[in-house]
Length: 458
Image (cartoon, rainbow, N blue to C red; front, side):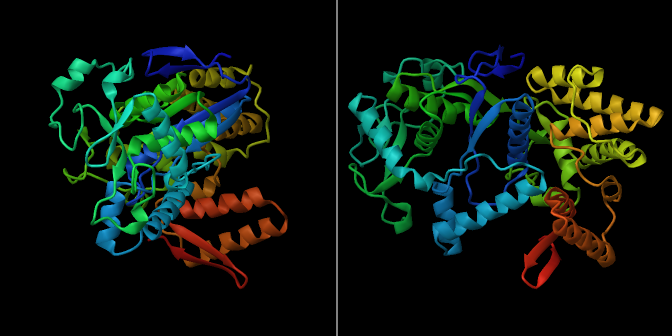
């Protein structure tokens, strides 16, 4: 096929050639659920949502796995601070993650495994690495990976072992044979809660972060699969260590293509909690509607740095209004995309070149201009259909063009009635669109036997 993707491993654009013809298997590292998702998480979720949408639009079957890390040092610390169980904390945060992702129009992955459900598979993988001499148990009970025994360590990050050792700031502690070695199994500590411990041949403890993804991806997608993705910050050490673990155990390439989305900055400065320029998805959605936020992310290439500022979001909102204005002026006709049509062909060429959303979005603006000139319902339909390929322009144009205005009770009541009518007519797609449009504007609907109520999202 014609789709080319930048492979971090080879540092080159490569054609996508699924291991199983017609079926793409993709694993993306998800969130560690101890707190609300931030804009960096949104960037990654939207980027790979666009990837899986375009793969499907290209006629491919996609099995998309995005994991949840629900056992981790930060999770344990937060649960103790909150005086709640780990499961209670992580369940709340997973629910919040889903609410945020749904608001941004992010489709649920095919599978969303939780790390705590795969501890037996992690222990099997650790045992296999031990049998191969790639893992050892330290005097303190931890099981570590022997990095220098795996040929090729550093191939993803492009760093040699000597370079990595030169930058190593941690002394050989806790029984590690080398500072570069990393933990596969952490022995239980006296102050850790019981729900953070599992029995194993190595004693009670819990898995290290890196082994979680190796076990889950192998269990759900096989020992080798097509695409492994995540944020650029995961390239080293997390993804480098995944390669060492998985390929050390199986002798097979873990993933054919490694994809990494770029960092998020705030006014050209890296976003971080310590600098006080850190924003949750909910912080953003309190000021800007969800589709504007999604469009702001999509119109930058997924590998580039994304500079967040209110001015950039305002510009994104105004730009998206131009597209919706065309759909408001001309009612779109239902269309099936003909990829030989000139606008569609250029959109496809852009997306086929490493998911080139900036160029694809520029095609949408050219198409909107043509809709305004000609009043063509077919071109308006094409604009909406192409937008759907990247998760845009599926809302009610009039409702979107009111973005920023407070929805009064009468308007919300009218939309709830419209949704009820759509459900009665079994037009569930329209009913869902109304729900999502309201959610994007901070209105949460709650269905019950007594009817539908609503509240402003907190």
